[in-house]
Length: 88
Image 1 (cartoon, rainbow, N blue to C red):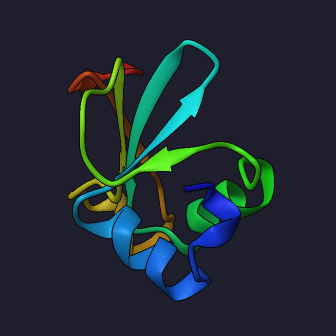
Image 2: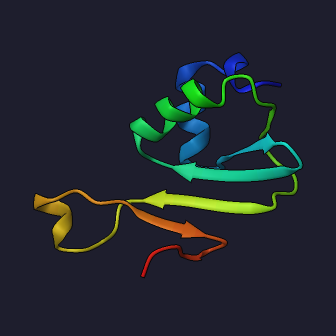
Image 3: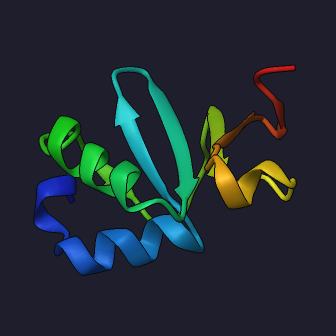
């Protein structure tokens, strides 16, 4: 199945909880995020790429809202790759 074959609402739900796995050449990336902008970007940029709901993934990418004080007045995104923070 390709990303473009998934309904927009289902793509957003899948990215929130189980995440989706997108095959990009020889690699499979598992992406999880509750941000609408990420779902919209995945839908736009990876529409012709094959995707899977479960299975093996080479990379695990989680984009989440950090639980810090800054969340209230300056929204931020925490990026975790395999599950350590990609940025220090």
